Image (tube, rainbow, N blue to C red):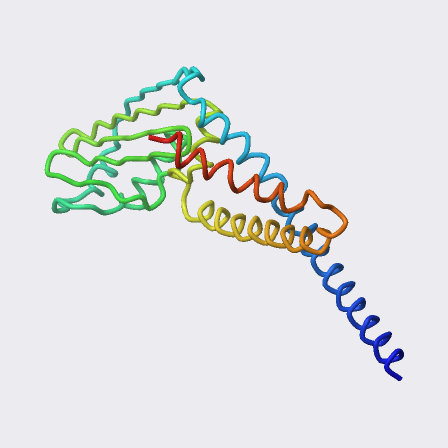
Length: 214
């Protein structure tokens, strides 16, 4: 009986280990598939950001001048100073004329002019409207694709949708890392260098941070 009981315990332990191994492998490959493209992009932009001073950029600046139609100028009304979106009709007309998305961005209103800042990843833009004459000045600056992806990396001027993507991506990366850690632990007996290599991955950045960053 004791031998039979011991055999059953060993079989149950092996079955539990097999279950967790299959589960961890499943979560690990699913999270790696979700993270793959994002990790490639973030790793590449990590390099470009780390060497940003060596990467030359040639910003392209464009400037346009428009005249608001009288009806659009009247739609601006006598609004007090403050922050508020442009009237829907004016925003739609400017979007069509300038080929940009004005939307419901808040503008800065004063007695003399309306100023609207429109920053985006890898680019910056603004427009001003003279409230008396209806003259519109628009300026756009584009810093290229590298700057665009660098700003995506930092979440700079990217909007709420990209912010949500970064959060989901970060959670998927954590799942990928933790399942990888548990898989290392399950396979550590057959791979003696597992924990020394994990410790090395911890110690190298820690020593650099403590000794070489001033």
